[in-house]
Image (tube, rainbow, N blue to C red):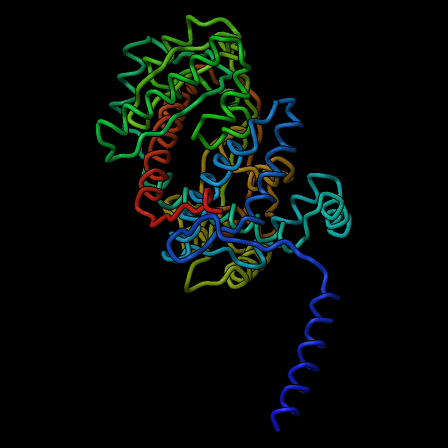
Amino acid sequence: MTMKKSLLALILAAALGSAVAAAPVRPVDRIVAVVNKSVITELQLKQRMAEASANLAARKISPPEQSVLARQVLEQMITEEAQVQFAQNNGVTVDPAELDQAIARVAQQNKMDIPALEAQLAKEGVSLDRFREDLRRQMLVAKLREREVEARVTVTDTEIEQVLKSSGTAHRGEFRISAILVSVPERADAKQIETLQQKAGQALAELRSGQPFAKVAASYSDGPNALQGGDLGWRPANSLPTELVQMLDKLKPGENTGLIRTAQGFYIFRMEEKRDQSGPVMAEQYHTRHILIRANEAVSDADARARLVQIRDRIQRGASFAEMARLYSEDASNTKGGDLGWVNLGDTVPDFEKVMVSLPQGSVSEPVRSPFGWHLILVEGKRTQDVSSERERMLVRQQIRTRKIDQAYADWVRQIRDAAFVEDRLEEK
């Protein structure tokens, strides 16, 4: 019996040995971070690092060392994961049909159909399923920003009057700026603040030694645009804090500020370009009505659209658009029969605007999807005119709102990140 067992063990050992020898060698994945109850793996990190490197190369920005890039990318992934989990835990979802439409828009914007998009993604080493999941997460975060931040930001008439009183008019200058942010946690102690200030000072020292701003931003910045070289794009002057505008007004293109301490941390700004937008403001305007049906936990995306199809059919058979809006529209304009007044280009979200500008006067659109829900749109008139005076207050309102949203979102993201349980295993071997 002992001999039989030994022989059997030898046979099994030989068979297992052959199987192991024949198996291909695969890299072993490992966990590089734990975020609450989810994990980020090394392979996921390497994929995002490759994408970040490709993005920097496309912008002709020299990437930082791999260890620095890994740290920057991982921190972005941790912050993103904390937001996605918050969204999922608070009932924020992306409907599959909504996601399908977003993918179709991406394909259309790149002048492709879905199979062509999938083929292009495959060339870049990205599956359509992974692209779909990445886009779903981006849409979750966007919805979260809208619900938790944008919907709660208001601008009072008093704030507008203060701006107009202090400057006499809206500052019509615009700046294309880049930024480096060394973020300071909300409850940081004196030692942490000193360490982070030293980090910001090191970034400033590298800039003064001649290092490109974009490269230093990619290496040091905690801002969401760090891996785009810190590029913030064009910003209206009045969307920025007054003190910062005073500094930027003094800078020439290519110059940067010193360290600026804010509630978010330590900033360094670089002036890329500036331009003056004074003079007449000619705007295309559309006298627009709409009916809005929102999708939510009780009303699916498909049901919301179906309700609008029925309402549109009633309008086509003679019902008043204004009366249908008063009865069914789910926004504040319903008391005015859905009347939005004269709408300027840029005042509405792109999906709404695209249909509005192409719609024949007097006709009712098919149901239109936007981040707010499903709309029927009616354009009652079109005109182009100088709106300098009437746009003055609106311009100030928009600029103040943009500034407050940017600041509120940065504060909110920092709070979500600080509240998350994070176990960093990147340096473990």
